[in-house]
Image 1: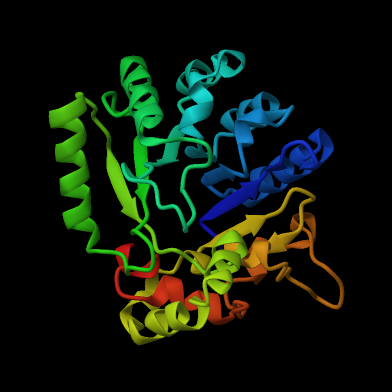
Image 2: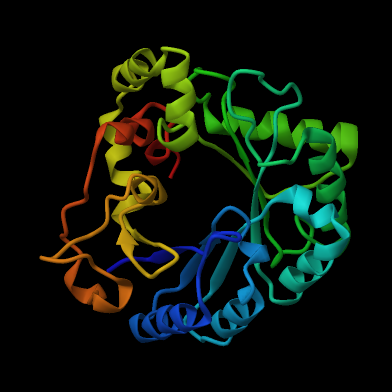
Length: 283
């Protein structure tokens, strides 16, 4: 039985989830009793029926946690000034990327259009609303290693980030998640363009930690695409590794009670989650 559902609302404007699909997903969540829903996408807050979806999810007694992968830069734009207050009113947890203070010219700048200075301004605004301060308004940050480095131990990075944000900017947060750079999508394209893909993949293989297998997210979560299609994780979604049972599978085709022992679809990118300090080792 999955413990959570991660919903990718799509990429504005070309591929976004319709209200009909949202409602079918919410109906499935209501019937399954799943307690955690994680909303993601290129900027989930900008999808037209975002408030409708959050409102329906919050009305479900079984849903205890709603998480939004928030673009901090978006919160500073006048046209999206309603977002932070809406999320606070619905008691939605925020997870956001903390950009590096020193952008890398040849690698991906995490956090979309957000730069460190903008992130600081947005985080201060969230603190004023009670995020990171009030017990039911969680504010968590994601940190990626620079370049091709392996992630450092989460507890040490978390302590450093919390101390730096508090001492230098007066910002309070709840947790820091240290994520590996997974070689899919734009990351894979850049690695190949710089002829570093094979070397980086080998470094992930060399860092394999068998104990991390028990904690990889795909063991207890379902990932859902903007059309309702089902994947094991968001990285598999980027690679179009959709569930199939003789035909492509959509969430409303899935019986949550019958997928506990389902075999996860894997490929070489999965070594990012099983590397030391990867996704699985921190849970």
